[in-house]
Length: 297
Image (cartoon, rainbow, N blue to C red):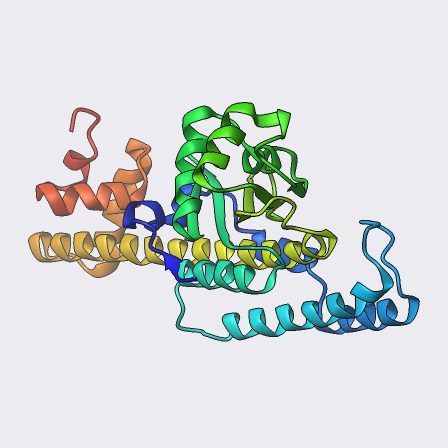
């Protein structure tokens, strides 16, 4: 299934709308087993033949799950080897792999809290965006509960689940019956969720529930990458504006580069404005720093 395009307003400046993700990459890496440890765990599963919870896994299904986890690891490793991919492209590829490999998944989406609301930032399938709009309209839904609690939630049938009567009924009318939602391992008080959807009741089993956290961890890493890219872009923009202001002062007052920069710093300290803001005002107004930094400017 092809990835559904998310509007530029939804993905532009993704990290700016999701503050506090600076630790997400290490946090998510800790949440996801390393290759060596996963191999050890998979070998142990093959020898022992049971997981414990969820209990519906049978010995016959464990071999399939072991193989599935290895496929997931290989596919996600290939996704992250693309060094030229943007954070938005990484998220799109993650949800595409999830719909392909997680048993029962037909549509999928990653949503994060932006400006107080849970908003989808990557999606596969039109229904994912329709459910995003429905969730925000009615203020309820399994993905919202997962984002708030940090737990994984498997919903066999939205049409009969009494926890979200409005959302469930309308989602079923849209053709969605099953949901599997997993919280993203984000640090601090940030929250996000990876949600998988199916048109069939009880489409997700215990195997799917065990696999989905792997995708959630990788989605968190992609968000962390988005923050790093955003920070770098903002730093470069600030540096460019400051450099322009320094150049203006050097030419106007025959100052050295150091003297011009010190003039900007002094105005910033005296006005309690950020250095880049003083520089922006100088470049836009043409005024000297002390005038541009005035409160009545």
